[in-house]
Length: 127
Figure (cartoon, rainbow, N blue to C red):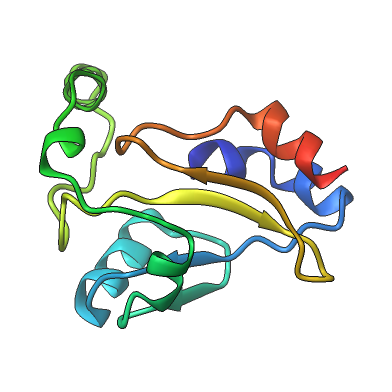
């Protein structure tokens, strides 16, 4: 999310409305929102309707991949916040771009927690 926040003006210039969707309990969703100070509208899909519709997964093995462990090691060494364990740590997220007409322009279900599409891919999908 940090890269999206840092380039929020570029997304806005392309007419994008960014929304964060959480699939966790209201308690953990609120904790995440307070800790990250996300500037985007925030929705909670407690029934996992969108989660299933977009093919997102829960994976213990992929949640603790070498890439994820390396991310946390670097964050700790750089004294960056990692926001600890919140809710279900095995639930994988994703990034999606949907046009105003409801057309799915980009689908990127994460293969592990640090798997996010590059900024250029997101901006290209917006047109």
